[in-house]
Amino acid sequence: MFHLLNDHHTICALATASGGAIGVIRISGPEAIALVDKAFVAVSGRSLQAVKGQAVSYGNIIAEDRSVIDEVLVTVFCSPHSYTGEDVVEVSCHGSEYILKEVLRRLIDLGCRQARPGEFTQRAFLNGKMDLSQAEAVADLIASTNKATHQLALSQLRGHYSHELADLRNQLLQMTSLVELELDFSDQDVTFADRDELSTLSRSIYKKIAGLTQSFETGRALKSGISVAIVGKPNVGKSTLLNCLLKEDRAIVSEIPGTTRDVIEDTIEINGVAFRFIDTAGMRQTQDEIESLGIGRTYKKLSEAAIILWVVDAIPTLPEANEMETLTEGKQLIVVTNKMDEKQIVFADRTWANPPVFVAISAKYHQNIDRLEAAIYQAAHLPEIHENEMIITNIRHYEALLHAQKSIERVIEGIEIGLSADLLSEELRLCLHHLAEITGGAITSGEVLENIFKHFCIGK
Image 1 (cartoon, rainbow, N blue to C red):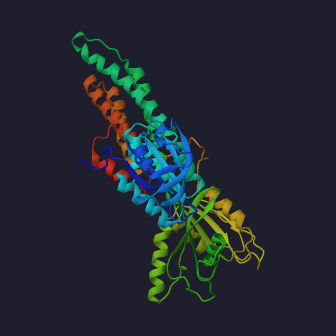
Image 2 (cartoon, helix red, strand yellow):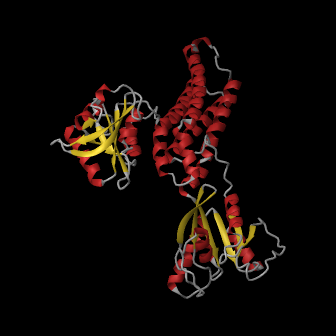
Image 3 (cartoon, rainbow, N blue to C red):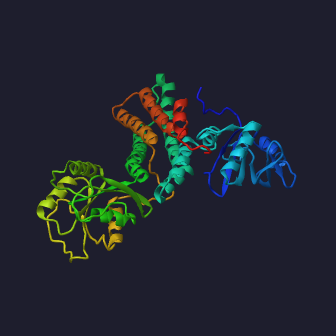
């Protein structure tokens, strides 16, 4: 039996990181209020079980020998008006690791069970407080590291994504109902679903699903950070540029060619979006075996990156320009002419198959770095991210949408060739099933749920 299915035990866990000024312990379950009441003495003398609705009480958590463990605030959330949908109590203690352990030990001795990773959110899902996509958004929100990923997770948690899927499912249900109604009257040769109208509606649904699947590339990049490779010949200032962008001495800078022998990666935020910068070994012919390995990795990272910063210290010669175009085909290329403090940079006219963006900077003196950052952000070609933006970031959702897209494609093809109503109905139901997998409506496998919730932190 899937061990995360609600076993109706009352559970407890630390809901905040230890080491802070305040620590919050969360308790949820049918006996949450009664169990905490056994360990809590309110200054007012009032029992927690006498509390109606949501309320905060001040008092002490008492050990079995009646000694005081800590002075606390206890917040009660009565079912169903809580995060999990059950009775929930939150105990706000001082952040001492010792105090938090003692309070948890006291609650467990009284009958609570230590919560498993993700069990509070899993109970919220099972109790209908949120669908599965919203539950997954909780983990994404906790893991968000920049404005973009925060907004996307918040949008999903608030149900914008779920509402879009619900609208698609309602349209599909309407189609399915009309098609299946024909099956009930198949012996009378009656047509309830106009095939032209079905075709129009199917294409509209396909367009929306395809738009969501296509957004996954953007979503994945926003979640993991858009990769930017810094490449060029030795001693043109690649490592200096990385340090300048990161605002710290991350890479060793030296006038000796070949100082960087391996790739160095770090992340910065530009306009609320994470970019992963990769400093690479200078590209040149060398007999040094270790440096050669580094140069090999340079070419590998160059092929993997979405944006290339090709650093030069003078106007690119024709051979170097040709090399740039060859190695960066299909990439967003920014030619960064460094050391503008030493010379006047004038970009010569040159015929480029795909003209790159040119930016002249001085990494040493931090000149024009803001202009370079603006060029990098523009090269990412990101859509304007709003609070209700529909961008897929979850691989499970992406796979379900791909299956749904293939099903609705078969519906469109079936209508065109005059497929029978029973076969059309089967494909429509498959499409509905795959969309329902995203929000949890079609999930019956405990293994799927276990895989989702086991990656949550304890206390969520």
